[in-house]
Image (cartoon, rainbow, N blue to C red; front, side, top):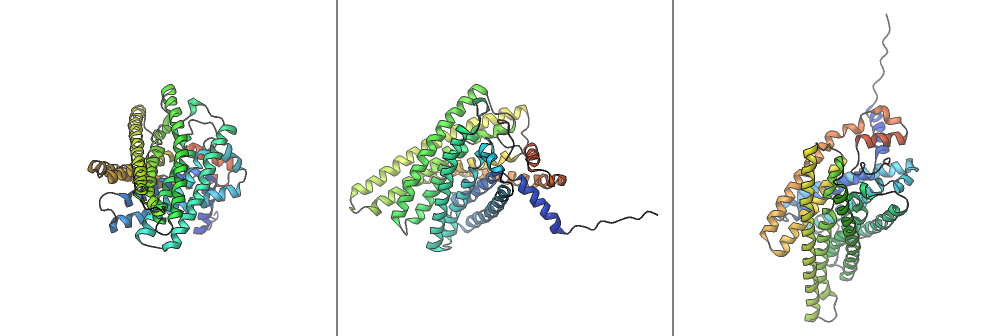
Length: 419
């Protein structure tokens, strides 16, 4: 009688380690698009125009904030571990026309944590007081440096190390330059809290934020012009990359929010810093605030225009075929969230019920979108831990498998491997 040999069951930690190794090899900067969207939802709970500042809204904002903090830390560990264990991936990160764009998601994800940390954790609950606020301010400076690197080094890499063409271009080109705009809006939030302790530091922060949004918006409008030309001459992006049509909401919506904050901060900082407390100083702050509000409304109008084009593009794409779920769906959350937030802020500035109602409806729709994508992502998470036979495969093969199973938004526009 043949003997049956039973293989002892592997302990739980013996199963977790290979899964973590597999996820590390598959890690990509695109993961931070998840934390960008999640952080934007946390901010929407704080800015929601009804029950603003109530305990339920603040609690929901904190719940999403801590979830986002855990995701950000986990993804950071995975990405850092990958590039430490596989240093040859660094060159691919720079030369890859897909992954290099996603590097900008990291600083933008970090700003969502800073924003809620300042507005809710520090200001509403007074956690950490002045010391914690200055810590968040220091983290903002780190984000600014990283955003500078993503913008100037990232765009320079597109000039020199990568190959691009108009027919393969999509709105993902915006990611490196939007980092400056997002950092600018975060600077406005930090400065608003900082002026209580140091008006001069707040003024310096707002001034740098004005520089950031000016450069970022200028580059973004140039790229949007090229993108419109690409849509007219070559049609909509193929397959799932059509979802990138919502990305123009990011620079237009977020820059509008940044400009509002800059105007509001200058309105209070001009009189506070002036040695001559005259009506002229007060009037200068008011004039700057009015100009910024008008500019913000113009940017909101541009964002609304792109929403209509995006909806028409999605409708046209769905008539041809269904759009398969992939990581690119997370790219829908952040742009729509910042547009909803800008609409709400304009409602507060104009004291307009129409803007508040529209912004609230759009915010609820964005929350439903985030929840749907989040639940579907958990459902699809099994694809990251299945195919365990690939856990010992070379890193290049794992990257190829990742590109097949989880194509990125611009995978149809660039022939490359995912770093």
